[in-house]
Amino acid sequence: MTVTVLVALLVCLIPTTIGGLLSAIGIAGMDRMIQANVIAMSGRAVEAAGDVDVLLLDKTGTITLGNRQATAFMPADGVSESTLADAAQLASLADETPEGRSIVILAKEKYGLRGRDIHSMGATFVPFTAQTRMSGVNFDGRQIRKGAADAIEEYVRDEGGQFPVTVRTLVDNIAKLGATPLVVADGAKVLGVIQLKDIVKGGIKERFGEMRRIGIKTVMITGDNPLTAAAIAAEAGVDDFLAQATPETKLKLIRDYQTGGRLVAMTGDGTNDAPALAQADVAVAMNTGTQAAKEAGNMVDLDSNPTKLLEIVEIGKQLLMTRGALTTFSISNDVAKYFAIIPAAFAATYPELRALNIMGLATPQSAILSAVIFNALIIIALIPLALRGVRYRPVGAARLLRDNLLIYGLGGLIAPFIGIKLIDMLLVTLHLV
Image (cartoon, rainbow, N blue to C red; front, top):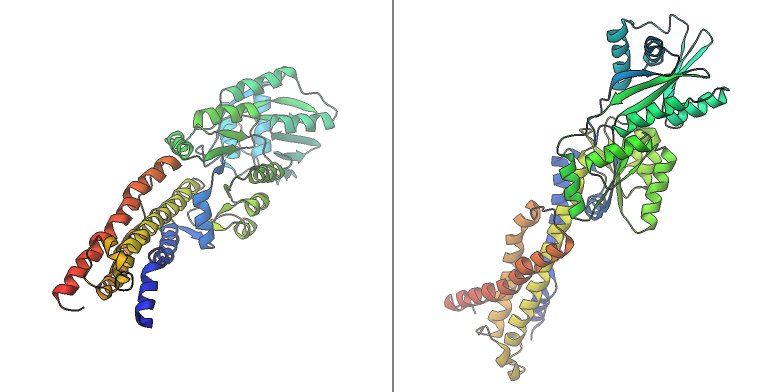
């Protein structure tokens, strides 16, 4: 055989099909991310999204609508509801969150308490932090705080006070309803509880069910107490939850999952989220988030929509499904080419191989030329599928493997026999060999 024939034979027999399509599959995955308004810092991040098996999702704004509203003031024994409402409003005047604004509005509507200018009062606002999990205001010797029950309990005890058992009962009852309790204290005295109501997004439970069917565990992260978190988690249909979350506990949770061999994805937008985002395998930072969060993540969601994480995982899964399907086709295609070409190509040298020339290819030259032409045509034919991607379906790995073997495995075995034979007949008819 000449060098040209040997090179042509090598091209036919090496796995050129998948080699020619891998770049197209990767580019298509990046393009689908862009269409979803997500910038991926690397192609590896898109691939990692397809392998994720644990999703960490913030409760507020992702699983729930996010705009929790104050619905009731529940005073402690010996405290009037108006006194509680007044203190709660004072602690919320500089709070620009939806929850803070709703507390101010509820106090105004129920008791006619109008917002006061805390700056003209010489007051100092104490902002909420992930570490303290409470906020408030200091003025005229008063220290009013509102926040998570356990944080306020610790604060009151540090001030020399006691946390009433009746208030603890109120907190538990509100939490069992799936609402969020905020405890209000004035120095060492607990005044009562504010009830915040949150609503689980419609259709989110079904989406979590789809994630579960394909082997992805969903974990809700929230600063709420365990009872509230458990109620919301049950309503939303997540697999697990992390209550009273702090940056440290988020980071520890991710590391624990990774130590167990799991790939973790999460979203975040604040500086407090940066350590966890840097640790996660797929980290989606919100475009409206801090620079620290964006630098820690390997994707940026331009829409700043925390639920986009579910869509990102689906895009990653589709990329892997496409790659798996075309790899299966390529392997089957190459195996079929070996049986189709080698007997015809070497029949002159080894006459015994004529018995294996089941396709009846005309000559060794026509066999090799037909295979080279088929190789080029099949790659061109598969490029649209590589760019479009295999349709995403939330099915398990066993069913996915079965479908790939039946459709792309069997198809890859049959296509070369039909394609190469037709090309060989055309070459002979046109007297090109």
